[in-house]
Image 1: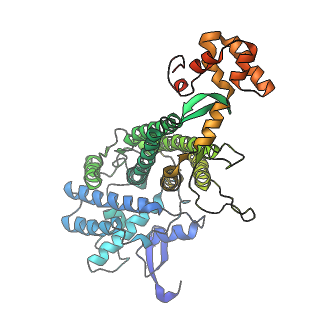
Image 2: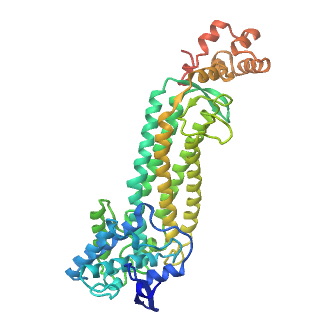
Image 3: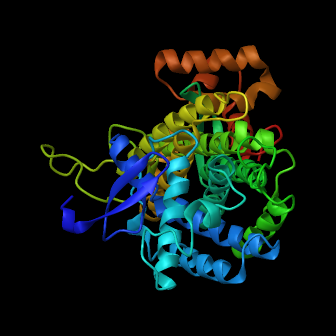
Length: 471
């Protein structure tokens, strides 16, 4: 840094040269210099920066209400924190994920930026810590050990509500509509990748939709565990240096600010030393990814071909699929979605392991846990919207291929079980398979079923419903 473009700030370790055109302070600058690790920053949809703004604004409001800060300081902090919430100071949050495991540098980044912006608003000198001090005022009644867990909950819940759940509901609604539209389209079922008895295309798609509905329910349950906040626990969960009511009052202010039912956590020791709520959210995201993987794989199998594969459904042609084979089109939306699912599985493994690593009164894997969950939310949200718009909405049955596959299936013989028994029905199927004939021809050859009875008993559309399979 050029001497003309710096200012000198101080922290407990001494003087630090800070860029004069930025609002962060000594501890943020030390983090920039000490952790040149990776490029991932807390910028996924502004979730973390926004959450810090909300937390610091509401903490100031709570401290004012409790008589811990004078009105003029509260007003300055609230104004500066609101600018963080509104996205006006995003460039002041440069820190990478891989820093201290408590998120202390990110907490101090927020404290320094809000303090220095408040100083500007008061007409003071940036870096002077007057009239607003980053620790004594912005961080009053707080520790990084309880603020960062609160930010984890606020940011994660915001992204779940604002991004993931709407995208999930949109895709599920599309699949529901397709299930209804194709409820009478008969196709061959498959188990073990082998022919089985008939289903309808609508029934198959309804299974996909039901998986998404179950994932919604799991995530809805997990989100409720995000409501308790660690605020008020300070360094180790005891609440040292915080007003006894700070956690309750701050949580109520955050609930009012966000419209979400945040509360002060019942046991701050657990909220500082373990992050089971985040682990459970990640598990819910993994469940959703598993459902999406199944759906995407089914889609690309059913659409495979178009002539040498199953070719039972068609999906939109979005772009050329080969640099050497003219006319080739690939199921790229399904491929992108499955890659996202693989990444989510990896993130969940990291979050789960990190969640198991709390020692005594603190888990020091907080930033990477938050990164994993927020990245999974963002990727799944984007991928579901893209898959919905560019693939799912365009799914259509290929009637000819569906009909041929059903009519040629040997498993229609299952409809004969109630009439001639399993072993005789098996003889018909095995004979047809061995000689390459139809089931009807095989039944007539073996003299086990007349053609009239065969036609009366073997009706593929009736086999998609409970009962004997007769029409």
